[in-house]
Length: 162
Image 1: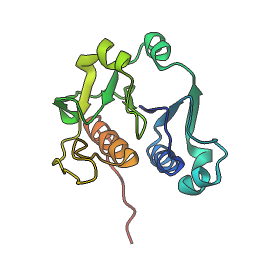
Image 2: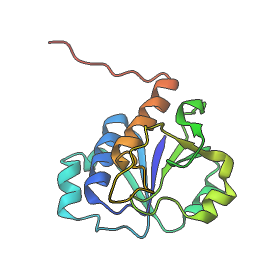
Image 3: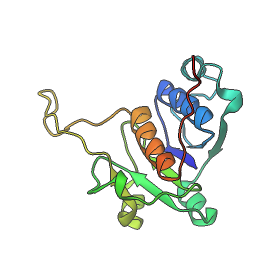
Image 4: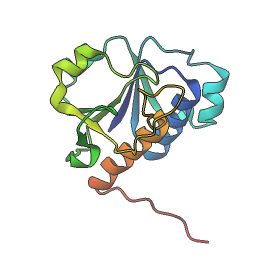
């Protein structure tokens, strides 16, 4: 299973996702352009020392990647109508998230509209921007979806005893 981040902008979010991927043995695909350098101090700090255990690849074109990968894939957006829990995940699924401020491009939404899912949230209307009802942090959203997918395929955490 892999998490795919389309043009991520905030190094701390990506660093947190690197850590989650390392601890779940999930892959991470970053789609350029990135809003930071992979050697960025904040990115490394957020991922702590988990980078050696993370399988990270960087690509230039998401649509081409999806056309040729031969794997099932799902997009996650606050604007989708179907819930992330409605997916029957497989262990080779690609879980795709848009950038923190731009989301996913319209071309992807149009081409694969039936593959968009959401994590339900209560809308919060903010005074400073009443048309934006808010959304979950990218690293939190990726973790929620990844752990649901892992739960479905039989993954369970083994917590060491005292």
